[in-house]
Image 1 (tube, rainbow, N blue to C red):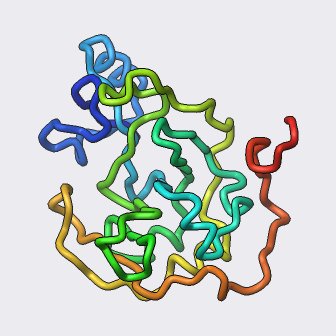
Image 2 (image 1 turned 180 degrees about the vertical axis):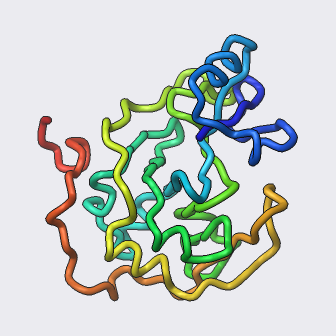
Length: 205
């Protein structure tokens, strides 16, 4: 699902974008012809996005790169990663929260975000979308697969009890944070379904 935004922006500045988002090719092409850029919208019934801002911090907490295998991965200009996947009944019914936040220091919002799980009425810049504040950088080439659901060990960490804080941007659901996340406490990793990208492993495709 995509929504329009002013060219160069990474979040939509259009009123009602959460409801006007669509996957209709005709509408999307028309928005682009009008000079708009696009954001990818996480929405129940469609897809979610894992927005990784600080991959090193996630690794320090026990996050495994293999857990992103099977998702649609995009390198962002700032050095982060957007991982897109299709909702499953488990992710659909997980929480009324629109966004689950993971901070660099557990439970400390002032430490900055390491990762956001965007479930509904939340967005990230669409692949290849221009950024006016980063004119010399582009998204990396995305992977070609849009998988369904979240790796079970990653999901186990993200399902840690969140605490509610003030809603942000959407006017719909309240984001949450995870004060006690520790992926290192996960059970043995299951990797049969994982297909890590070459840039994770150093191997060519």
